[in-house]
Image (cartoon, rainbow, N blue to C red):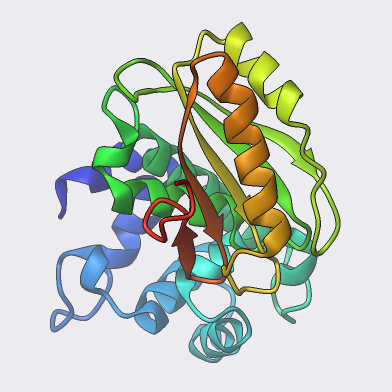
Length: 235
């Protein structure tokens, strides 16, 4: 199995027997196992009394799009799948929490922007299925290593209030040298609005007074994202 699999803690404990029980024709690397087979095997482990897990897995994947989408789904939406009980819901959320820990561990101790894929995996897991906008800030040290990841505000389905002076104040409290701004678009479309662009420039200006840099602003949608730096919107 992949080396990182053992680092996932609860995820490894739940998925290792699942992959072991897959047909011999399936890959021994769980990253290569199709979502349908992986989810059915997982459900077979947590719901051994059911003989219809293949059909249940198909229904869940049709609803949430992927195994990752299922893990990130709010519990209230998971309850909408007939057949998911308390035990299976607890197992799903445990696996999701373990996956978040694994994603975050990839960012520790290194410049977070050097592993864009790892950063986006983490942010997608945290934000992609939020039903309201959430504004987060990644506070970085002089080497762009993560000091803190904090949710600064939660808003409505299409707006989150952000106060530039509060952002700068918090950066000073944490002795941060740089920031990455992050928020989600519950619509799934990560294209920045005029308000997003204006807010980013206001935050960057407030932080510049304190000699704190805004390295990027990432907008997370449904399996898609936009980088202000890549789009030239931080100039």
